[in-house]
Amino acid sequence: MRNMTEGSCWKNILLFALPMLAGNLLQQAYNLVDSWVVGNYVGDGALAAVGVAFPVLFLFISLFQGISTGSTVVISQFFGAQRMDRVKDAVTTTYTAFLVVIAPLTIVAVAVVEPLLILLNIDMSAFAEAKTYMVIVCAGLIGNVGYNVNAGILRGLGDSRTPLLLLMISTVINVVLDLLTVIVWQMGVAGVAYATIIAQTASWLFGIFYINRKYPEIHLSLRFFTVDEKGFRFHWDHELLRQIIRIGLPAGMQTGLVSIGIMAVMGRVNSYGEAYTAAYNVGQKLDGIAIMPIQSIAAAATAFVGQNMGANKPERVKKGTAATLIMVVIWSLMVDALILPFRESLASLFTDTPEVIRVCGQYVGALLPFYPFFGTMFSLNSIMRGAGESMVPMLIAFVGQILCRVPAVYLMAHFFGPDYMFLGFPAGWVVGSILAAAYYRSGRWKRHGSLAAK
Image (tube, rainbow, N blue to C red; front, side, top):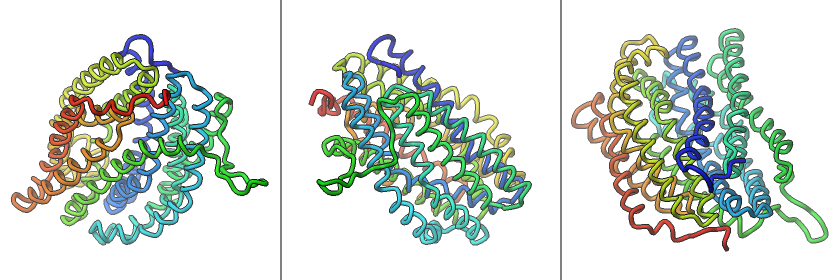
């Protein structure tokens, strides 16, 4: 457990972020390995199918990512105030909510796969493979969501190393099974999907075992209800559940809005054929790797702010914000120099189709110069969420990702053609960063105060 209410703000945030960065890289390795295997051993149709699945799955798990974020904030504030009894209550409440909702979410996810694929306007050459991949992965959502819930709990306790350990185990399983199912057993895109859900489920179950051994005071249980003389009762604290939902639901909706925005522009991208769909898939992988340090630093800032708000140390929150923004802007400038000149060479690792490589280069080249705007928006939203302010960051995401980005992409495609539509993507970041900075400066995000003091 890391107590971030004392010592250097820079050091606390950076050291907390580094294991998360390594974990995010490993998590991205899931999709990278999937894309590399299907792109080189199955074909561009399967590569497009895996790419289409990403935002859809992202949408399905967004609710639980929100619950995970809400639990991180609530747990970190109680941990900062050294109220371990309430930490235990928050952990139990989080797990009960997860177990109650996961079954109906899985059923809905599997049921809507085909309608969503039709809505996304995916090329028919990739439709069958995309449906196969998504149905299998949606049926195994419990592993993916369970890992994220475990990670949210641990980060609230100041532990960012255990999620990394669990991902290391999961990634090794995934890579081995990818190679076996596709190359050895010739199972195609279905083999990649089975490998993914098996690896994710293993990560979740190993997480339960590890947490119960390492942190017996917050014991996780898969039994989420009790039936006794008082009747049927769920194992949750109603007030803590309200706080977790108040913070987590807007955070989950924000993630969902990002997914909807991605799917909305994907419909435009997919309309230009399989090469554009595959290129967009590869471009998202490169983009995902490039922004990981920003996401990791911002996530560390959420826990840092949560602990210091709980300990009633507003000056450390201010210093941590400055440190976070400086780090993400420096990385944004570095990644431009590291990736922009080699973007087509990197794309060629996933496919040897010249048109896919060319379009991927256009996509990455349009996004990377605007990373400082993304870093500013994402970091400030994460910092405000750590203080318990979750509604405004969600609204900022809606304005940026839906009201700005989607029309910009469609207008650029309409007036200038498909190669220029990618220039519309950063519009949401620019607008979102301006809105986030304005609200942060207003100071209204501090209005919720310390949850631990209530």
